[in-house]
Image 1 (tube, rainbow, N blue to C red):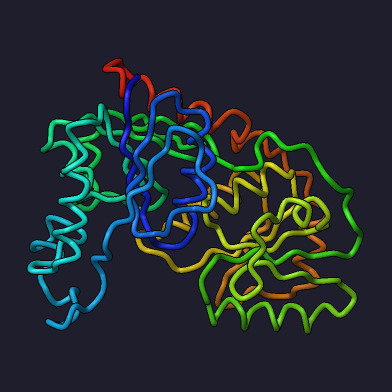
Image 2: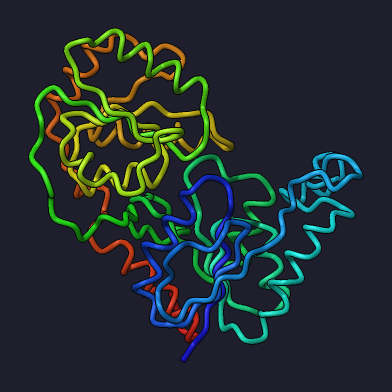
Length: 322
């Protein structure tokens, strides 16, 4: 049996959620590397290696002051940081037993894997990825997977990857209901926007999922909501697509304009109402516009996306063409 390593970035919960959606479709055994704690349940044939953090002050000053970009050649490799050294060493120690390494996401781990002579499957994200480190990462990868319907000949656009892709609707839409779907972290600006939206629409029944009111499984809430208000993260959009929901998308500031690029694609495809985070506008009118949409979410390619990604991973691990 082939064996695959899988680097799961620790920022937010999206990379872990994507890993858990794809992993059951991968035939190879998997060793997952991440600074995140091991999930409560892992599929059979999966080993979790928890890595030290490389973004914390170890007493010698902030790692951001330790030349982490190597003069623009990399994104994050702080000099003299013990956690960074130990996490790279932990991946390297397992590499001889791996046929390929999936990287979601890190230019530095991509470079390490290729220098160790391992095949690499790189998970990319939307946005302006034309800087030198991103260009290097793409050149080194055997396959670059885009988890959205990307129009880019350099990547494999497998479609939006949702953990709910195979679920059937569990509830009917409830008139007047709005689900605010946030991320796992705190976002003061997002919270303030929601307070304004809720105050401006007293005739609506709002439910907030995210941050301090995190819901592990929001599927029923997605199915019930007449409108979903969400940021433009890849997993959130894929989950909304799986539920066929009407949505207002408010992109949040992220590196490389990731969420703004995603929102622009949704707007172009007519799949959602896109609002400006700094001045979203008239909330009753926005909700009315979203209700009037009849989005054809099949354009986001959620059905079968996890299986398509897994098939490419297995082919690369077996030495084949992606």
